[in-house]
Length: 432
Image (cartoon, rainbow, N blue to C red; front, side):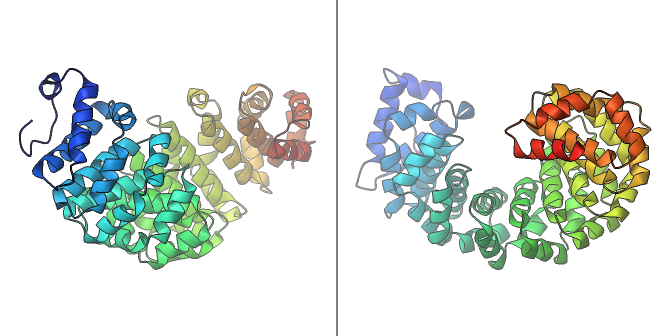
């Protein structure tokens, strides 16, 4: 294996009796305490091997005991290249592997990774941010808190503004993870550290816009103070611009951010509509490129319509009722039940105390029968519950209530009363 060569090949592995023997030799060399070039090369090789072929070798590397010596290398005064390789190897080992993530956190990796964010070389900072993004995933709430206690927020925000494109993307993801799974205090801490302006700037950078939009969605979730900060900083137009782009994942995250911004916030609901948000969200809700895009576009429309008669009417005028009824019959609902559940929720919000919209839905011959059928036959309780809610909203009109009964919706609604799902019970009870 040549000095500084980054990519491990089958020829390198073939020099050993097995892959396991090759990994064992690399781990032995990483454990070399002299700070030699051999140690740096071994860490680089482990990173390369861990990243290869969709991380297919990470289980073997983990089982061979690589975590402890890699963390030890982070703690030493090893070269910037060695630290970058060690952090990169840990990031690859942690990728979508909860068992590995827990072991890396338990091994004490967080403190040296946070230190590298401020004091490491450019590549080491990128790899450290990548590792922290993996180690703060959904299931590791305590790790998220530990990362915050270790002071990671400020250097991550600094990297948002001045790191490489890859570093900015990883920093945004790490901050999003902390905001998602800790509490409102974490959202406020990240916002006060100055994250919002660089995140908004990154929305126009194709390389980092997806995690930036995702981070904004997490920051504003159920937090009216941060919602207002993002809106006041001019966040709505660039998020809407992403809906018209070609990056479907960025569209999904932008729709999520807009949905969270609009939640229980009439002022921001109005701002999104004034900025022309209904059209792009309707287009996204009918996009067959991604069921997540369909679901989140529809969810955002539901949030815009919630207790907002002006927005209810605006969405209906732009063809929203037909689009939502079409989604109820979409074959994509079998792939992602959120498509159906969110379409029903949006119809409920459009029709709540709005007789014109109630009549418009009833005039679509399939609408009530589709809702009744889904209450009866859907395999997903969330779909049943939201369809029951839509029927409740429609039933405020006595004529439509008769139409619901004729669609044989009453027996499945009665059956929902005995469901263990609280929302389904409540919606069915309101109907009946």
